[in-house]
Image (cartoon, rainbow, N blue to C red; front, side, top):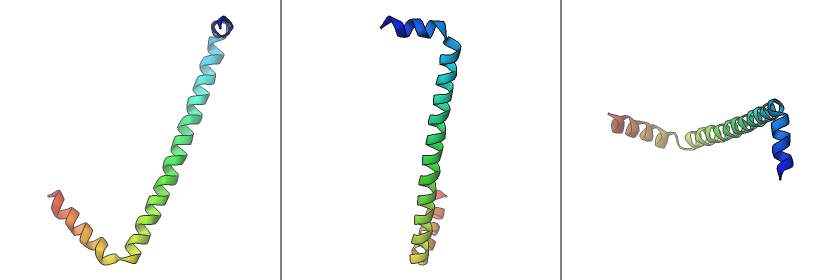
Length: 68
């Protein structure tokens, strides 16, 4: 148990750098997942509008009136 603490105390700069790198990797992974989800949602919305454009217009009007 104490060997981990001793290692951390001996090399705090390298441990900090490793944590920064790991956090950067996590951030990149989250950004990639969000981008993929956005692309899927965008494609699904475009397909729905092409299948039923009148419903899309009606929804747009409804949201416009609801907002005011």
